[in-house]
Image (tube, rainbow, N blue to C red; front, side, top):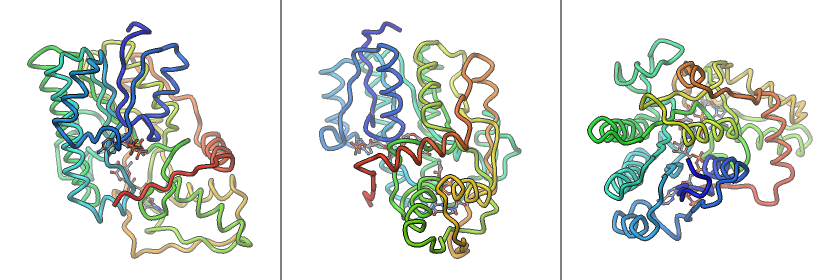
Length: 316
Ligand SMILES: NC(=O)C1=CN([C@@H]2O[C@H](COP(=O)(O)OP(=O)(O)OC[C@H]3O[C@@H](n4cnc5c(N)ncnc54)[C@H](OP(=O)(O)O)[C@@H]3O)[C@@H](O)[C@H]2O)C=CC1
Ligand SMILES: C[C@H]1O[C@H](OP(=O)(O)OP(=O)(O)OC[C@H]2O[C@@H](n3cnc4c(=O)[nH]c(N)nc43)[C@H](O)[C@@H]2O)[C@@H](O)[C@@H](O)C1=O
């Protein structure tokens, strides 16, 4: 890939898009383009086609999506299904018709069946039914993976899908209803510490297990996929290590310095019991995670403390 190739990062202001932008920028990629959702609504096919015809990017990295934690997914099935289908269809089909040479699609570990064997291998896709809380989002993401696979199979184009595990890091969403668990816990424990170490209420039973990857490691995986023609269409991107939500709460409490109690609100959903990824396929060809969870949580908490603008993303 040439350093002056024109690379459109869709969703460049989001947690993932901004991390990919930073990674490419620091590697010397000088022709990056991004548009906010106000400037270009990716649900609008006509607008997307006009934009792609005008800009003619060489590469598209698709980090734009309707994203949220377990409750946002569970309570908003239609936008999580339809908006994600619209955004990705417009980008993937526009890229195919516009002769974009390389397309990197981002999905999520929730595409795999709820009770698939662990760790999750890429070939477990579509072998059983999905986790109900995020099946709508997962179905859209599966359609994106299959669209890229179909274009690759029929036309031989370099369209590839990366499936990250649960991500965290700078520019995450800290809205207490819509965010994922790690940013929600950072904010809840921080605010409780400031409030005389008051008790914190967390969701579910605390027994589900999750795997967490720092978004800068995911950005390195995207850089790796940009700079190499990957031999297959689908790659998991994770650390290979998971922990219970209770263990995560303890780790975050320690980093933040909160000494109060924790209450588990079991009226909130647990979601899938476990979704540990087998990322050996991508690791075997050259990508490795580098940021351990404790270090990553500490870095993210520092970022949170130093940020003048914390993203509270509540589009619903
Ligand atoms: N966060 C996570 O834990 C995980 C995320 N992923 C994947 O990574 C990708 C990015 O997620 P993340 O960065 O966390 O999400 P964010 O919510 O932080 O960012 C999403 C981005 O999408 C853009 N966007 C949303 N709707 C539209 C629209 N209609 N038109 C144009 N742009 C739009 C937003 O643009 P703007 O800011 O301009 O409104 C925003 O920058 C997604 O594909 C997601 O599936 C995968 C696994 C885990
Ligand atoms: C990335 C991934 O993210 C989502 O799936 P999820 O992993 O289930 O989501 P989550 O991060 O919101 O929760 C993980 C666990 O944590 C528990 N939990 C405790 N306390 C809080 C809490 O305060 N907030 C949140 N959000 N969860 C909490 C919560 O009950 C659950 O057991 C999907 O959007 C899916 O589409 C997807 O791709």
